[in-house]
Length: 249
Figure 1 (cartoon, helix red, strand yellow):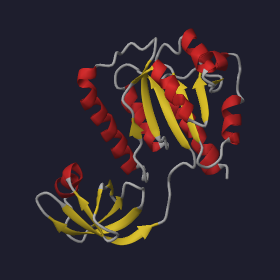
Figure 2 (figure 1 turned 120 degrees about the vertical axis):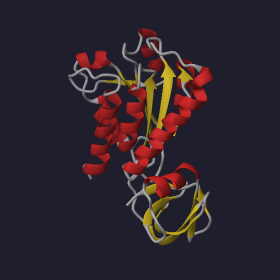
Figure 3 (figure 1 turned 90 degrees about the vertical axis):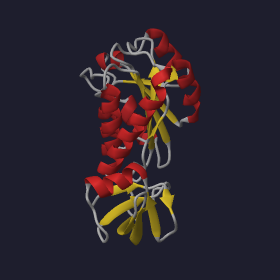
C-alpha cells in the first residue's frame, strides 16, 4: 500500500493531500475514490485511509484505521559526512534513510574536493530532502530524516555537544586493528539516546580534524579490517546499528 507523509491533517478522521503527493496519487498511481493509502502525520502517527474526494488541488483521505506499529530505530543516529564528489551524498541519504538514520549533516572537510555553493543551496537541500522523503515512504518509515545545510567543520564540532554519544570513523584505527569501540558504544546506549557519527570525504579526515574531534569528546573507531569508501562506511555503520537494536533483542 502506497505511503505518504502528509503535513495537512484536518482531524483524527481526515487528511488533506496536496502538491506533489496529490499529483503522484492522481497522475502517477491513477488512484480513484475508494482506493486505500497509508498517511503519516508530522508526529509519525500512521493510518490506513480511503480516498474520499479528489479535486484539482487536493485529495481528501478518510481514516479507516490508525496503526500502532513503529519502524524507527530506538536510538537517534545522525550521519555527518565530509562533502563527497558527485552524487555520493545522494546515495548516502537515500540508503541511509532506508537503514534508519534520523538526520544527515554534510560538512566541509579539509580534504573535500567539492566546495559548497551557496547560490545552489536551496535547490540542493530541496533535492536531498525529496530523496529522503521518497526513501522513507519506500522503506515504511514513520519519520522523514532531516537534512541539515552543509556546515563548516568548526560548526559541526559546536553542535556535537548536543549528542549523547559521538564517534568518528577513522581508517587508521581499522588498520591498527581497533574493533571494540563501536560495538561497546552501542551496548552502552539505551532507548532515546542520540549518536553522532562522523565520516571523512574521499581523502579521509585530516590530522588536525582528528585531533579536534578528540578534543570535543569524540571516540575514534574502526569499522573492521577492510577500508570502506566514504559512501559505504555510513551504510555499514547504520546496518550494524540496526542489527544490534532491531535483531539482537
